[in-house]
Image (tube, rainbow, N blue to C red; front, side, top):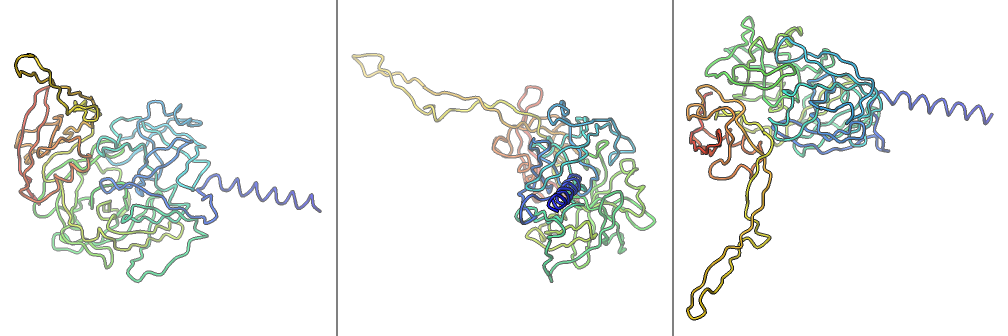
Length: 446
């Protein structure tokens, strides 16, 4: 009898262990865990452990496969198993990008762990997000995490709570709105409305937490989806298969049920960059980070539900880059600084003539060489204030408004370009070994 019980228990434990390997489970008694994230340019950056190596990943509802970017020795560094070459497609054109698929990898986020995970390593250096964010980002993950767990994203305090569905306790919320999620190829879509060209247009939008803009809409004259009023052509971002360009404009209003926003930023990508995305039936575009961050959200993929509640960012003004400059982090530069700690601010006095009170002054200043971030102009918009001032792509920015850029993060510098119309911007730059100075004023186009 004891032997039979032992065999049954052994069978059940083996069955549970085998079942848990191909899904995320939370290894604590609460079956729930809270994880801090960084909010960088409206994007969620989480600490994800891959095969024992802690990396920074974007939490991106717009991706169906976890992808690792630009690792020269990814097979050795992460010990990827059973690699095979495949091709992936996405925004940036109707092209494919080569990737290395690997199975049976171990992922860990806080106390959530998955023992059998497919990963896709992409070697295209143009897909590296670090230069544009000024922060190392090694990859993106989305569906594989959301499908197994209830994911609560609190943009206000920059935390996510992961809970196993069987242990999730739903709390009533009178100020919340609830949405049904529709899925296509493992990506979530939501219904919304936009006021454009004197029409109220219903929309089917991809929920894209991996995009930093507000709205991307696909032009469709038959239903009235096209830019209205002032606009300008701009670099919009990097897709999986290349850079994306299009027009930036505003919409009078955008609503998600009772949540309504006025004068919302919108981008209309050029059609050649969205060929693959527009093949999805009835898709009108994407809702991205600059709107999503205004809510604290609970995603329940298993029930196809989303709960949204206003947070402290809800009434934040919709602004945009008025300078025309797209910055990138381009490695490090050397900076020579006075070493105060070693007595650099001291002077020594030596008497030169014993009979006369004649002294010489000798500086004891010491210097230290430090490595600081190098910020370069990666894109510059035609006819923009920066372009008209004479700034160029590859200019290295040394100071902004009289302060060395070493004092700022990339995000802090970019925020200056989003300030009010008429703000003066003074730049000291290096071009071809020459130091140059430029001044321009932010100009509101929209």
